[in-house]
Length: 137
Image 1 (cartoon, one colour):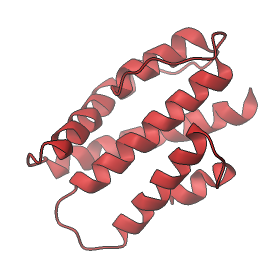
Image 2: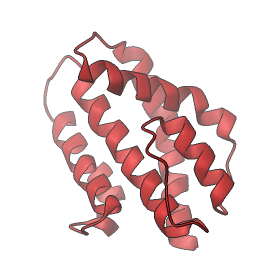
Image 3: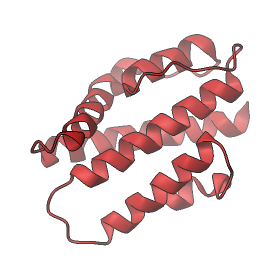
Image 4: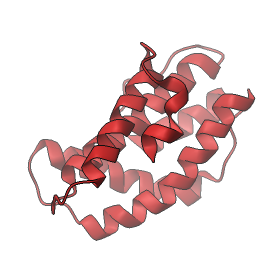
């Protein structure tokens, strides 16, 4: 699913290309029976981070992005520095959960996979909004 959504960026050597690579990893992980969702969370967070940074780099008036890994902060930057508009309060908590899950993956803590799955459902809507924004501007 994610590889297909991001297919436009296939093998492009920039941040969007990296988002596509993480999307492919997600598709592969979803085909396995891994009980722990931490690896999925890591790649999901990275996919979003690379896409946010690509959009900030290509659509903002400054052509740059912060070094933050916090997805909700990157969404706020995108709204502030580009023409992208959305209800950020709708996505804030989901993006925070994904960021925390990815941080916990790095330190091998157990992840609440149920909460993470709920966050993915919400964030997938944002992903589609971002991809539409990328095309229309």
